[in-house]
Image 1: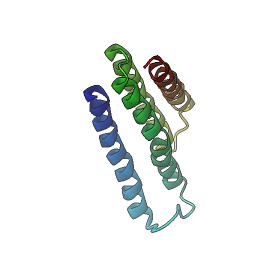
Image 2 (image 1 turned 30 degrees about the horizontal axis):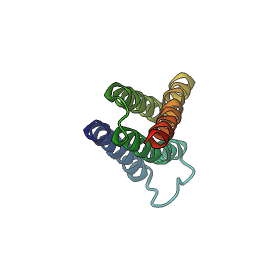
Image 3 (image 1 turned 90 degrees about the horizontal axis):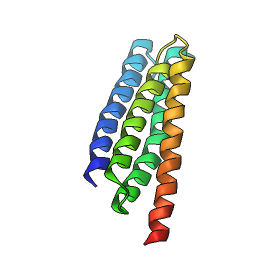
Image 4 (image 1 turned 180 degrees about the vertical axis):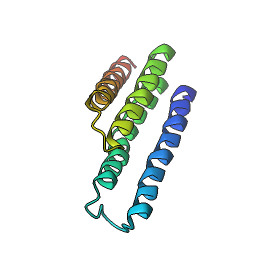
Length: 128
């Protein structure tokens, strides 16, 4: 399960970066709780929240697929797509400049990872 562990490590670092963005913006805007009506803070909170909503299920599914004997190349492809997708999406949401291509592209990369990993889990579970 070392392939998924590698990508979990990368994504863990990404989570720290997104958290740091929220903290820096909170301090700059003097907002202790919530978003204080600050649009940049709202966007950064959502970038972090969206990351926290999608990454865990993707990693869990990848880990089960890897443990079930899915081909290594598939787990690598899923991991690369997930990291790129989450970077694109997080970047798009973390700025005031609208970046719909990066935001949509991030989801286009993320959702198939979850779907393919889920389908792979079903296949390896049924086959065992």
